[in-house]
Length: 170
Image 1 (tube, rainbow, N blue to C red):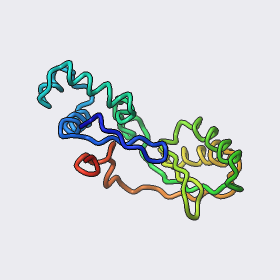
Image 2: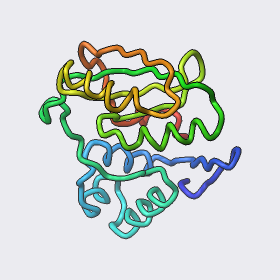
Image 3: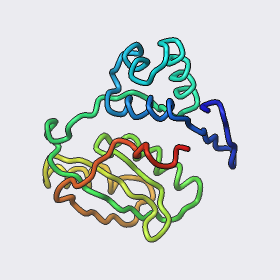
Image 4: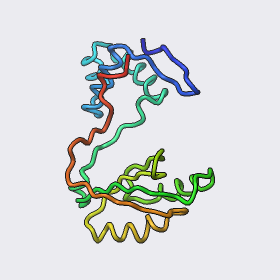
């Protein structure tokens, strides 16, 4: 049942039933579906569906509703994966880097990593000239950066907006 909560290191984990999974799957395929149509699709009354949605939103399971834009249609024809090493991993160093990288509009995602590099970024650019500008004006100027290693994606193989819902929800 949806209202079951498990606590682990201050992180809330929900146990989902079949209706919750159906709601989440339907929203992933059509985030603009009306509450009435969603309720009908999952076999609930509109008010019960609305209550469930409210719980899923307030608990953080549903983080938002977004339009998925085409990078290519917007002129961003290249995706780069950028590995960044910092001068250290002190709290202040990490905080300063993270605040600065959030201001870079070409960065689509940024992950603090274990292993050889401190961060991995996924960035989009129009072309190599645009990447050179990004590297010069943004990436090299980020605080505490000592090493940048970039790779360019040749084509998308998988680009999922969400985790598959048939796993890890029960």
